[in-house]
Length: 217
Image (cartoon, rainbow, N blue to C red; front, top):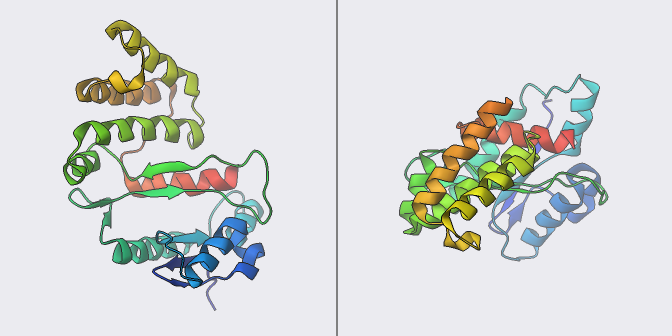
């Protein structure tokens, strides 16, 4: 029988329960339980701790059927949220969070807005009717992904941001215009190219890297 690596939750239903902490981690088990008791929790899925065990026992590789199960998990979220991952019209963005059986210091920071790229950011601008918000989210995502997932030095991005504010006479980030943010996105991508930690445009690749970063942490 094939192993089950992914447990879904959402819309008042869940494949897991609170007492499955060893398999789902504290966060995953609690999210499942919150769904079962009727709390309004966004749809999602949990990759089991068994995958982490497999990863370290098999030379940092994944089970061959993991990504198929992850894709099914994304389809589950899409059907509940009414949006589509990696779609240029009605794009679904996800967050990647780490969670162990017990709370541990030093685990990976959360990555928000995974799924944004040069095309989906336009869809976010359109659906939110706020282009500035979309590009501000995108530059934050590139910075966060590069730091947390790719292991880039966050100071390189912070310095670029501060330099732009200084050049333009801004005191706070909120003074950055939409055009400034678009320029910052390009500068952030250039940093990745220069240091050999290139930001991936493919949302599925972003997701695979994100899952790997959780286990790496």
